[in-house]
Image (cartoon, rainbow, N blue to C red; front, side):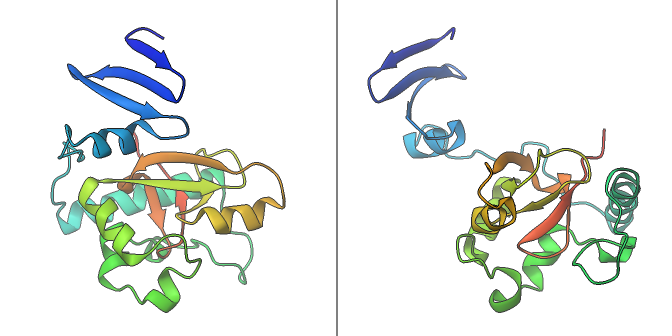
Amino acid sequence: MKGCDYVEDGVWRTIAGRRVFIKKGQSLTEAMRESGKFKSIKNENKKTMTKEEIQELKEKQFEIIQKHNPMTDDYHVGIRKVEDIKTFEEVIKTADEDEEFVWGDYSLEDAKRDLENGFVTVYSSHDIKQGTFVSTSKNQAKEYAGGKPVKSLRVPIEDVAWINGDEGQYAKVKK
């Protein structure tokens, strides 16, 4: 890989003109945070959305969900109408640790950190594409996967139509 110097326990990469050491199994974002050289790894496009913009985002996400993976029953947790969609900020503001973050490997504190950064890692027992159910909990995804590999993806928080702190559906609105 261009711009990399491989060593036994990881790799040195040059990112934005700075050298960062990435340990084996570590994500680039984690390495950048750990290095201290990139103290403000945030979504640079992050801005406060108006109520109208939030409503428009939710409506577009609902269209994506209806097209790619609509709910066809009335007993599973899921998104059946626009009003079922929450923003990540709404999830956090109304969070009850006992109901929102029940799997134990992703907490309200983790959610607040991710909200500040503008990105979250989501997991699924399926390939993560439009409409896929995703979780902030790797443990939950593992349970659903039934021994199969779990998929993960680091995404902007607004690319998920959130149901609660543990679950949502991936619905990236094209800009």
